[in-house]
Amino acid sequence: MPRVLIIAQENEPVKRMCSALKQHGFTCLLVSHPGDVFKKVAEFAPDLLLITLNGHLANAEAIELARRLKLEKRLPVIALVTRKTLFSEELSPDIDDFVVELHDLDELLFRVKRVIQKSRQAESPEVIKHGDLVIDTARCEVTIKGVPIELTFKEYELLKYLASHKGRVFSRESLLNKVWGYDYYGGDRTVDVHIRRLRSKIESASNQTYIETVRNIGYRFKARA
Image 1: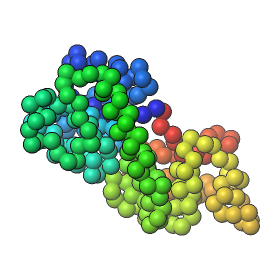
Image 2 (image 1 turned 90 degrees about the horizontal axis):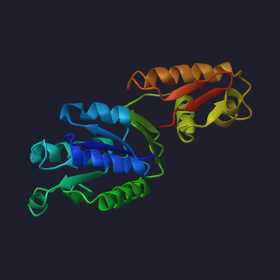
Image 3 (image 1 turned 180 degrees about the horizontal axis):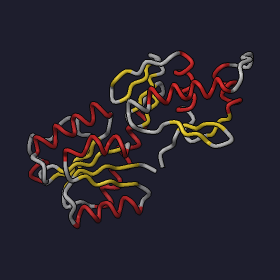
């Protein structure tokens, strides 16, 4: 279910916009205070940012916020603008698309779906993203909020395998076979030890749960709701 973070004041047009998005299968989160945005992005892990220009934020502040979110979080951005803003020189090249107020909900839905689809198609298959966690398989690098996380080779391979199959449950035996190989003769306690070390590194850096224990079965990489 695609997630949309909306930065705007709560009012009737915004409520109608949220309602329309939810009716068409989107999950929405409204943030009115710019100071909460980065925290909410980390918690909510949105697929798209909708931000009001000429709204409760000064345009320069809103544009800078949108620019930072796009660069740091790799979020596509749609601006909600007035006609005056539309014909000014204030629209940033970091903004992927725009909708003119008062918003035509059919147009808004079309543009939201289009930008999310375009963003997903543009994502490199060599990069696995889950909120602030980014696995660059081309460089064999893992970062959280842009900060590198030092992993051993097996920790990295285990994380990459689980993250490539979000939501799927794997037994310890299955993980031994897939990550360590069929010729590995160690016990399944090896998986538990590596999972524990992996969790301590990636979850302490983000205060988020990425790997879940499925009782009496094994482990899975947490899939977004």
